[in-house]
Structure formats: structure tokens, C-alpha cells
Amino acid sequence: MPKVLIIEPTLVNFGDDRGGVHQDPADMPDVTKDAARVLTQNGRALYLDKRDDPSRGSVYTATPQMVKAAEAMAAARKAVVQAHEEEGGA
Image 1 (spheres, one colour):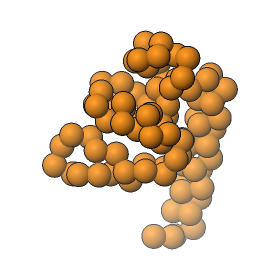
Image 2 (cartoon, rainbow, N blue to C red):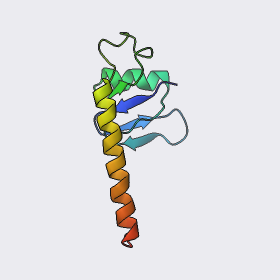
Image 3 (tube, rainbow, N blue to C red):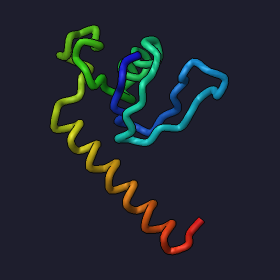
């Protein structure tokens, strides 16, 4: 299953009984090949590995800088959630 970088808020169908699952920008889920194709062609995601990209990296693949920025966003989001939980938030 290809791994993608979500670049727009979207619902992702993982091919199971959950239906569409919300994904925020900077999320990097493993998705089915069909879901990856639909998400990338609709401008909602980019492939992390150019070997998964039918264009072989020229159109639908995230750059290393994009991946680094997404990882930083994910770390910042996690830090905010942890700080909120430590303050007794729900």
C-alpha cells in the first residue's frame, strides 16, 4: 500500500468498514492504490515514494522539503495536544 502526504483536508477511504476517515494536512497514511490514485489526481495528496507515482515522480510526488515540513507540523500538533492534555483539557 502506498504512503501519501495529505495536502488538503479530506476524507480517505481505507477500504474497510469505517467508510471515509478525516485526514488533516501533513498526515501521512498508508492507503490502497486506488485511494492513492484518486487522492493525488484530485489534488488532495501526494505520494511519498516516486516509485508509487504513475508519473514516476514528475507530477504527484512530494518533495523532500514538503515531507520535512509535514513532519514538523505533525510534531507541533502532537506537542499542542500533549500540552492541552497536561492542563486537564478533554
